[in-house]
Length: 441
Image (cartoon, rainbow, N blue to C red; front, side):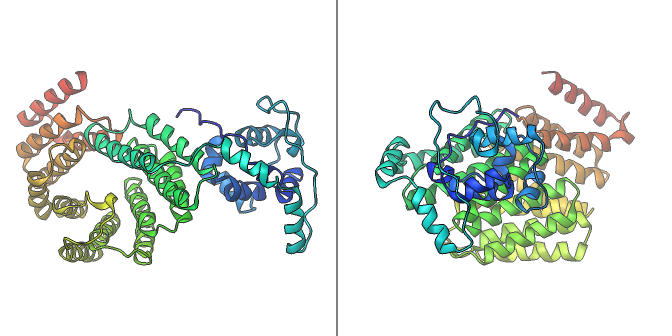
């Protein structure tokens, strides 16, 4: 993963805040990290990447369960977060400007009112605030926001068609750019929208890492997306991110996590101020079905599938669906239903559902068609239909060759492993010959 872009110098308001000064002086990084989030928009997941720390270690520090004591770690934190060396008892850092901002240290007083008066006394004057606002650049225009959202839609389309390996650097770069805008003096309405854009970009980045089977990085970005969405209380989008995290947990064979995450997603969606649509509820119920199927709970899986179909039937033409759930159409409902049955070993029910969904779904979603082709092949193999299974898998190979996806490669390897008992059969010999052609091209 490329080394993260370092943040710009921290806001003067933070560097001259008495609480920040004292926290740095005593090296209380629990308070430092919380102040970084509050005043500079630097979140724990971002701190982990910028300072080369694990997300769990940062979480323990924020919770007060762990202290940073080693000098090399403190230097990484100072350099990663652009904390001037003198504030944490270090020598002047190489990146510091020639005229560092000096502020008199003050011990925070126990009374809140006195602390607020002390804080006001050391803050920059209104004239300096105006200069800093000018230096930060003009707030993003409507066209900038539209361009950012259009690029996110384009990234998703290209991810479906070609996989995300080549997209990751561009998406991460755009996320860094938006993070920088969030640290500037944006008007309230613009900042609200920019938080939404940042949440979508962090979610997309997490998805790209998930598809590459880089699960720890994916979880870090999904967590960042949740934090950003929480800042603007977008509970519907939080539900979307939690649903993706639930899906990842099924791939990691963590059924307990998968179920807990999708239940949290359902709770978030149902408490959203903007309301939840039947399509969102249908998608979440299908994620719940996946989680139950991973456990092997037949009754609970069937109940969740029934609820997904019941909610889907409630969809009306006037429902204000968020853009991120529009992919969940009837073909997607059918194929996910088939996959849920397939996870339970109910191949005779799964096969016709997956086959029908593939007849309906768009040919432009090459990764989706490859996934579903391998699932169809697996159910056919479970039913003893060896030739049909190899035919379906061969069709999936054509899409696989055009898509960079480690997750998809994993499905191919699983199916190939299931053919071990049939290696001498003509259908398998032909499939493996075609597989060698694809891998060597």
